[in-house]
Image (tube, rainbow, N blue to C red):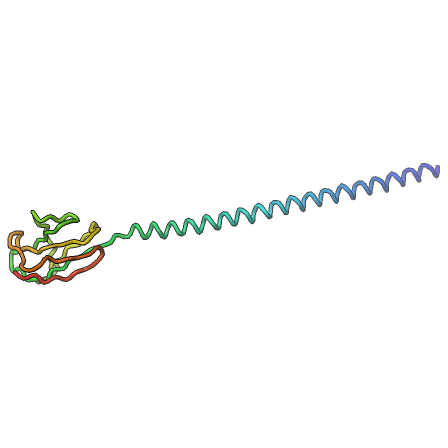
Length: 152
């Protein structure tokens, strides 16, 4: 009988060693999987960070494009009761053939605003779209505000 117990003991030791090797292999496999997952997560985070930075940059550009450039002409002149000031020009919706009514914001202040001026704009102010102001044409650039005191 002693041979059987030795044989059984040897089997138990061999089995225990096999279990340890299997456990060690599983642990090593889990570590490898964990490392690969960590590398993938890091790569995903880096890509996500790059995308976020790119989106923010694109959003800033979009915001910059969406803000209109306002060009303003202010005429300081008391046109008198019942009279109105008109504006004629060479571009951006203005023509030399017919005038555009300016908005009266005070007893001696008339304003014209536009978001479509893209180049230098020459203009003249008229009373009731018939009496031209004297002197040289006024000039305004895109996004600028000019205060003009016409003489008639």
